[in-house]
Image (cartoon, rainbow, N blue to C red; front, top):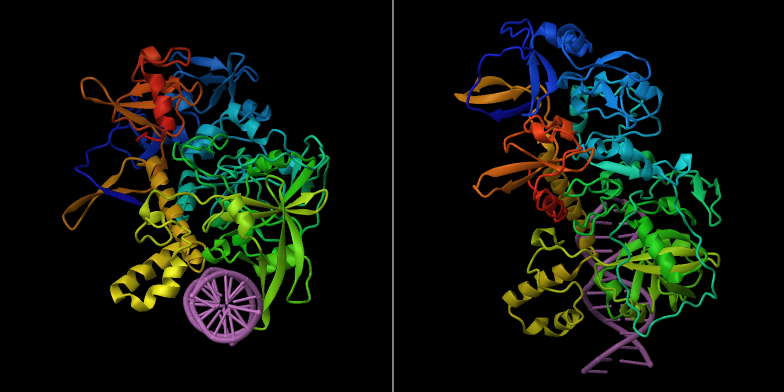
Length: 613
DNA sequence: TCGCCGCATGGAC
DNA sequence: AGTCCATGCGGCG
């Protein structure tokens, strides 16, 4: 139930002009209207609408009837009511939904009518989100997403609340959807695909890639190909020769439940609402990073999810490009560097499970030297050893300082360990920490002016504390907290991230919410409230500009041709919108009509993320 | 005095 | 309560 305050109520009139009744036993919701909400229909008209017979009953003698190109069924194309009942064919003509489904195309269906539309294509499930509609459901944009993937590798969208549903089944009703989405903390998508390894067919050389005099270690990510890895339960992995073969399913397969934990599985939706295909956007910093449990190693299934490699395929490709081998990169694990990891001591504490899974078995505390290659191909030798600790072991890599210096790694960055095959070599990659511009986004937002890694600070702490007054101590304590990126406060850090992501997600979600229908006005303690029977619905994101007359204008992008169209500033847009829906401007109600002047600039504005809604 | 080594401690889970 | 792990800190060369 959605409630907002309101200024008044008013009598209802059936929107059907042929009816126009003001009295009915039950008001029903009709089609989505341009101004937001849904057409209010009397019981009779609403029932006709529900039964998909509205046009036949009320528009039979109107113009605009056409025939399905395949089954010749008459369809009324002349009104908004029937717009979801047919699909315009690229080759001309229309197709009814039944034929559309039979031919395997993917008609769009808005939430409001979703349960009325026979729909279907398999292997794709999704949660309701505007980007799903606007970017997935169009015929033209699904294919690239799954291109190049084996059937078993098809990406699949999973409701973040763990209730995937297929679009070839009856879609959830409006109410049902609302219940689902509102019970979730976020309304994100989870995009998963199968591989845990990436085949890298590149030129085989002498394994000695040339190194520049000053190799730069740039962060190897920030862009994803859109299909991120992440299904540990997969039984299929591509091998280096491109053959898909079976893979041993871990004994304790990290379950779907684990996967559905939003933290790991949910890539952020770009602020711009761009499609999944293109949502990896450097400008928005969105990152389709998906934690994936490692695909090999002893006892790998016991690795804590926070150590699961979250490399994007782009990162892997970049590593492969840097190494320039005909090789297979298998992400093993990653770790956010603590201050002590990245400090001058040069000891990197390895998560126990990771160390035991991917490093040699050692029986003595001295350990063994291990050779690790960085992403530029330079080989380093570290001492892999352990310390006895509370009847257990604490594994460390010693001698990592120079390597970290070389790679410009510091506290807060993420060290990524991968396996390079053939050769079974360890590869150490680095992902730079995302620079938070918002102080609240910092793990310990104190001063915000202290570098994540401050090698001087330990000295201050060690040598100077006795001479400091309590205030100074306090400051240093705070600074000390601040520099503990990735240390014990890492857990807090993760929480902060979670919270930030949640906030972010909700903020984004809010941008798409629209009133679902006409509210019932109720009085509670002398306060008029609009009461909605249904949760809010998703609307399409739009842009606002101010014209020369200082009047606000709203722009919306056509889902079909991507042209920007100007609309009244108060218009509420459904999640799916095309030029043909542009009832406010008859001169631009077709995709063939050119954009208005200045509309192209909106694309740039949109990319810069300055759009409003 | 300094830096390294190895263990101890204690917070988080 | 047990385990993990970041980091403190004492000892030693």
